[in-house]
Length: 448
Image 1 (tube, rainbow, N blue to C red):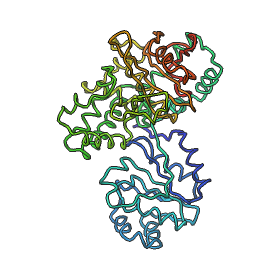
Image 2: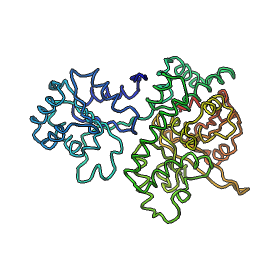
Image 3: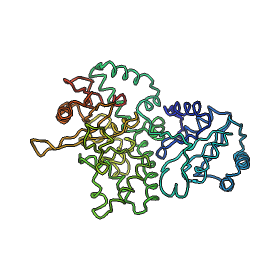
Image 4: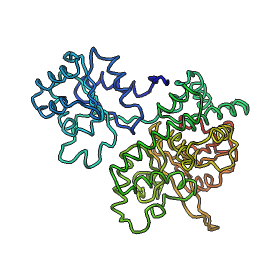
């Protein structure tokens, strides 16, 4: 029998800042993909930081709750009914009401404006797929919301879950000092990091790993999560086209193409506006991360972005690995063990690219990339990620091995020399310097 743990999450500190700084003047809206831990952290926060709380789960609410919602404009009566329904006494300015999966009850979300103005209690909303048309039709989205996004557990949170609070601070110090780790230590750290790539950052998957230490069992948990996502997409788009786009992400990245090819998934007849709507819904699900092509990196990344040219990554690399081997009923432990020891023959560069995207997003960066044709051949150059730091650029190239040539980086830095501050090759060896390029172990991505 698996025991459901409550993991330490960085988002908790942001929630405390909201409570202290806003003092009930806004509701807190926690956005995130399904199964990412929104409900768990909301309830844990309510339990620790308030005298009492009520958790209203709109995915499994009693009939009396829906009746109470119909009369939500009579706030005194609404609060009284909630206390009777859930058997919890609320204390003015000392209690919080959690509206879980609030997208399932647009009427309550619209009422947040008035509940906040009433100021008796605090409010936390959790939601996924919040902007889908059927969840917002006919309502005014409240401006009295402080919105934060919850992502899968990052690598530091993963280490915490395994009882390790030492590794990441030591790595951060090594990164700041630009100090090498030694080849043997780097190999050990990379093996630890590959475990994170395989298990991923979904709390249920990590919980299964801690309980069973069996990667096939972890794979089963991840498949259950992926099926929830695919079912959600089928509810939005019964034709299954969004589901097909989602499922094609590993195959698309493995081709090493300069953009996601919708026609290879949907055919050539799909209208551009329909595809745009599909993409908006996928983005709203927070199960995927988009990197957009920057046409002219010298003048600011968002200002010259081609939103029709993009790459799509999975929000969680553990789920990505399972989706990549979806043709097998269960990804056998032997495949996982080979991945863990870096002995699987397949080129896994696209898996490393996905985890870098995930880590950059978790660290607060937006994703951009740049491609351009070679002046001397038919070859295209590509920089995998471009980070904007003030008025300067940090170009990044990702390699799945210790191979440390970086022609694309060199050419990019020559072309935009006046705008470059730092340049990085993320790879699978120790931290080194190669002239002006920093060769950085991939597990240090979080510090960029």
